[in-house]
Length: 190
Image (cartoon, rainbow, N blue to C red):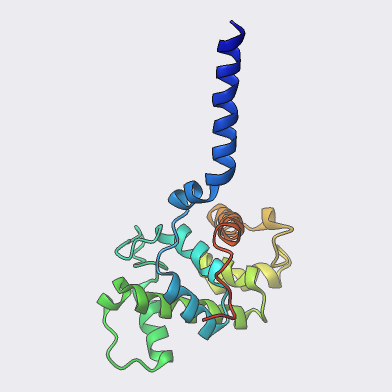
């Protein structure tokens, strides 16, 4: 009887030890991070943390370049066609086509530029920029102007849109997970 108990505990300890050493590879199966080189390069160009970009892409499309939302947003960063066209014009692209939104690198370029634009619009406030990426900059500006929301994660419950609250929570959590699982990705090395 005592031998069986020891064997049971041996397997348990073996499982605990294996989990300790293998938890990152296992978690990387669930928290994929495709297009790392492009994300790092484009993020560096626009001053956006690659872990943040990865989190946005994970939440928006689960890294599916052909993803399309019910509202019509397309690609990795779920860009609306009108936004994509406007951003492409701002970038000086002369031959923008809607098909560019399903091209992973072009979508990353458009989405990253737009996120950097929103960050600049909100005076460097990354949280407000992310809220605007989800809800639209006019709504977020109104929330901040009318003191409904301060533009930070502290009073996230004051955001009127449930989807935007969940979006910010998910982005923040997944960004932390990506920092843990992919520590070699940095803004400075590209």
